[in-house]
Length: 610
Image (cartoon, rainbow, N blue to C red; front, side):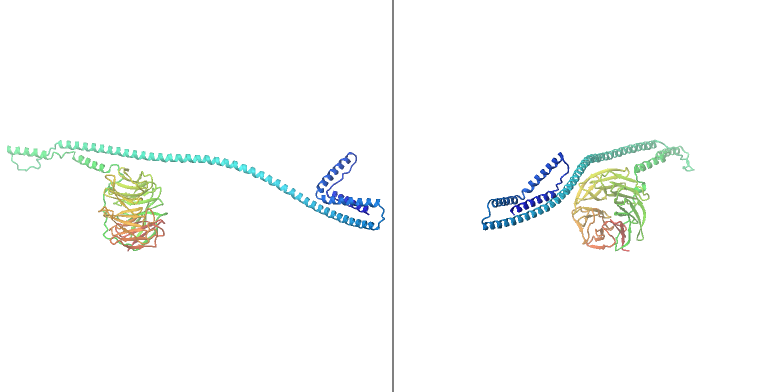
């Protein structure tokens, strides 16, 4: 029976080995001769490999099974050599044999279970191999994608390098262009200075030539006068002598003496006298006109009306959209029947003021940028404007084309005024200069360098008063071309205005305060005017004095017009609700009847108390 157990265990091991071989996928190829040896060796190698792979996992079981086989063989040998004389020993051996069979069966069952687990693990291993293969394929695909991305990265780096080179080239070109631009600006400044210098030289030569011509005409006139004085005129006195006259020798002598006296008396009454008078008239006419851009009528002084009592406006008579863009300045003419407005739309518009309404009369163009300031001459026939295009322009009211353009400033012109001498104008600019221009020669005759941005200026006899961003008001003597006094202000000066009698100066500052200075004392004493809610809206807000000098008017940032009483310093009235933005300028008619305010939203409002 032990032999049967050993045999059965061997068959079980053989069957399990066969099943293991089949589960491992061993295929025995057919054939004979040399090919048979080849596949046998192949199978042996595979079995050895399998044995090596699986022996480690079942080493303990194999060792125990080998001991069991050894014990079974030993028992069979003993039983075969010794006769069974002892029944107890035989029964014990049978019991041991049964136990060994049971143990062998259990071990065989465990071997089967282990083989089943091996199959399961092999299946799991196959699945893992397939998943590993799939992962390897994905890894290969990812590697290909990585290679492609690396290629793209290299290409992008090359493109970035090319773009950087182009950027460096463009940067160098830009630097070169900026350098050339600076050089051109410097060259432009030099050319402008050269042009101004040449104009001055040309003006000086023209003056010298005119003076030589004047001296030559005066010398010719003197010669003509001297020759006329030396010439004699024969006068027939017989027609004027009495009809009854004595014929004595004495009387004849007296008549001859009287004739000589008459000859000396009318010696200057030459036949050339009309020509001499014509020469004198032409001389003074030419000397007066010269090469002026002004006519004789423009040089004549015209009477200006005097306002005895200005009206305090109480309501708006008319509200209109006066320009296409914001309005910067407004001004009444000396006759108060004409109004001029200038704005950022580069034009000046003229308005007739009749019966409490504004009617568009004409549009003056010619400026290439916005208008900052306008001014009428005393005759009301010309208008002067300052512009952002670094020039001042002069128009006749009957012509929309500028009659004269004054260039020379290097930055925008902020103020332009007629001087009391009608053939001269004064301009102030952001380039920190004030220039005096001669309209007869269309040239700049004086340049005053100041320490700060000039925001506004006014003119009196031989005096220019300018306001600046450095909180100073400067007084200049045009004869000495020097600053004779500095008046401190409490903020940036935005505007200046002179009273009609030139005795008081009004300044508007960015500290939301109006200051009135008495020019007769030339002291630092001043009267300040403030009001709750009043705020200066910009660096170019314009305030005015009424024609009678009793009131002050200014526009606020909230669109309200404020009017103060000069005598008591209190706020007289407020005019709200008509402007939708900051008021930029206010003008009071010289008749004292109207006030006009303009703002940055293109609106002009006519105010009065009628």
